[in-house]
Length: 398
Ligand code: ADP
Image (tube, rainbow, N blue to C red; front, side, top):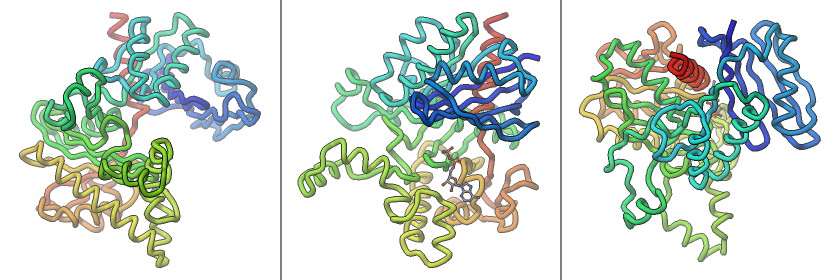
């Protein structure tokens, strides 16, 4: 049996999953964290034998070697890995689809580093360590931004001096592309829509949140921008604010650019408004117990999502379905109901029972037959990366 290794490398951690080459479900997945510190450790979750944890010594390279050594305990062997699929955050304007990694591709990914200075170098580290250890193992890069490369100019340009786009690449790129692509393909299939004629709104609501308008299978507008900070209210990210906020905070509080950026990324969103938590489960519970901040954070979160979905609909002339996905979108009926109620103009009529069951009995549908369709579709970015890696390997071998 051959396998696809899906690899998501951070600067001090990596996540991985091992998929049989012909399957959409991994046999093991896991996480190595606190790498290159005394607390380095790895967790492996096996579908057969549950969760295993152990300490590590060293960085990415040592952790991969430890994983390779552990695999026989799960009746697996690293020699059976046929291809590795890597999540890469930023592909700039260079990558509009997943690619087989070669020297040229590595150079081009590196050129995108300035657009994602925290993430891309960490993603590259994973690719480089694996190619150092296993030089002949095929590797595929799957970009978070690639799906949104079909955005038209009018949707991706900011109204700032054009030179900043031309010379610095300042534009909307969009993120969560692998999730939006997976969910839109799944929706098109479930609804029996034609590949070249479909119109969808997708709300991906996890810790990070973004929404996308999809037309004829292509992303035509999305809420995240040059960075993942733009758009919706998220766990700890503010989403849209007035661009003059920076000046105001500097004038009135003497905050540095770095401080403001940190506050907008790490202390804002649901956490910032609620003054309690970035976690929606905690907020729902607190709100039910009367916590005013939690209630307010949920109100703002839902309103802003509805408002952005309405804005995205400017790129469509009908709505085949609104799809909810991500941890919040997949699991929280109350949030979905609030968003759809806010959008009553669009003809959403929630079926309370179907919504409570997350559309399990109706292939995802949570609205009445007479309503504009809304669905819950669980996302699966790892399965999508595995699918791309498998496809590119086949094309490469053909
Ligand atoms: P990530 O973006 O890190 O992949 P997830 O997609 O797992 O995150 O989403 C995390 C969010 O989903 C958290 O706010 C969490 O509270 C929320 N969530 C997960 N399960 C539920 C649930 N049953 N009800 C409400 N929110 C949930």
